[in-house]
Amino acid sequence: MFAIARKIYRRVSRFFLRRRLKNHGFTLLAPTCIAGVIYHELGEQFRSPTINLWMYDKDFLKFVHNLREYLSYELKFVQGIDKTPTAYCGDILIHFNHYATEEDARQKWEERKARVDYDNLFIIMADQPDGGGITHEDMLSLKEIPCRGKVILSVK
Image 1: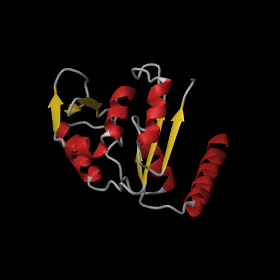
Image 2 (image 1 turned 90 degrees about the vertical axis):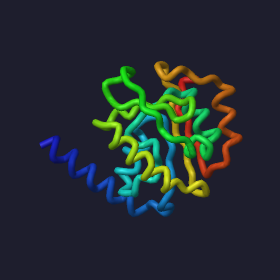
Image 3 (image 1 turned 120 degrees about the horizontal axis):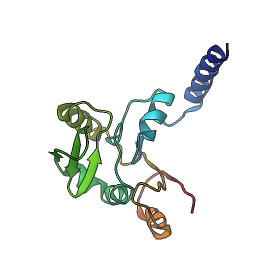
Image 4 (image 1 turned 180 degrees about the vertical axis):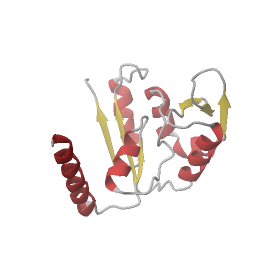
């Protein structure tokens, strides 16, 4: 009975979230899978190359500070780091943990980076203990990035 109630609640809340959404076609960048979850819940097209992957916090900060530059690089896949596809984008290591093959990861990366809307850009990240750690200064440096909004969840 509880499982049925939870499914109904989820569908209803998703319906109201989607109805209240006024900004469509936004790009949400995140160093973890959270952007994909948010896009899915809102019923929006994935307009971010950072869907279904993760990168270390410090690498993510470099990525968003120089977004256009990093999106111009070609992915260079490496073997033996993870069981899932892993690639360098410039000097940033990206773990495509929700993809079975390098071809799938590359195709989705290229497809979604072409959809990035630099004028409708949002950043979300969390200070993760295993993510290499970011400092207070790192968090403040996000002020320099021109975008519509930023959210950092932190214990600091």
